[in-house]
Image 1: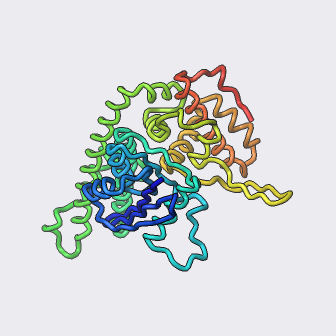
Image 2 (image 1 turned 90 degrees about the vertical axis):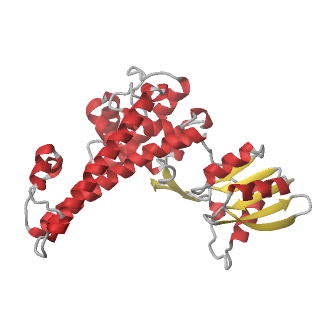
Image 3 (image 1 turned 45 degrees about the vertical axis):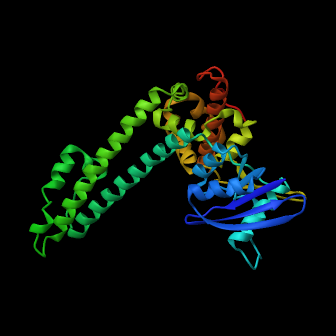
Length: 348
C-alpha cells in the first residue's frame, strides 16, 4: 500500500510517499499550485492521501476527490501530534510522521463538508467578523471623544439615527482641518467607514435570510422557543450531516462542551470544558442559552436545577444548558422532528 502524506503550506508543500510493504520513503517539495498537486498524484498513484487540517485543506481535499483518490484529513490537535522533547522538527518530519500514523491507523479523521456547505459556513463566520469590525470602529469613535473630553450618548443610543446626527455635528473633512481640529477629520473618516460596514452587514444579512428560507433544517430549529435564524444557521452549518455523530457525547465533544478529565488510580477529576471544535458554534450556544432563560421553560428549569440558586454555579449551569440544547438540536436534525415541549423535560 502506498500512502502519500502531504504537509501543506501556504507557499510550499512537502510530500512523503510511504510504501508500507518495503517501508521505503520518497520525499518531494513542490509549490502550492493545483497543477503541482495533480502532477504528484498522477506520478505516485497513491492508495491513500493524508493531510492535516489548515486553511487550504478544503480545495486540496476536493482536488484529490475529483482525481478519484481516497483522502484522509487528520486532526493535528490529538496527542500524537505533540512534539515535546523533539530536537528536530521539519516539514519532512511532519510528512513522515503523518504517513506512519496513517499506516498504523492512529489518525482521528476530520469530517470535510461539501464545498457549498463550507461556503455557507464561511459566510456565517464573515457576518461575525463584520460585527467585530463595526464594534471596533465604534470603540475608536468613543475614544476620539474621550480624548477631547466631549460626552456622547452611552450604549446603543450613540448609534441610532439621532445619535449619529449628534456625532456628525463634530465631523469635518480632514483636508479642511487645522492642527487644532485634526480629530474632527479622523471622526469623519471613521463615520464613513462605519456607514460602509453597516451597508455590508445589511447585504450579508439579506443573503443569509434568503438562504435560510431555502434551508428546511434552519426552519426546523427555529421551532425551538428562543432560537432564531442566526443561531440556527450556526448550528446547521457546523453540524452539517447529523448522521456523522454516533451519539450525543460525540456531538458535545465536537463543540468542546465536555469537561477535561484527569484520571489516575482512584482519582478522577473533571476540569473546565475542552473548548475544542468550532468557537463560533460554542459562542452561539452560550449566548442563546442565556436568552432562552426568558423564553424557554425547559432551559429555565434546567438552569435552575443545575445552578441550585448558587451564584458560583451560574456558569456551570449555562454551559450545561448550551450542551443539552446542542444535543437536542442534533436529535431534531437526525430525526427531522420539530421541537416538542412535552418531550423537553429536564434531565440529568
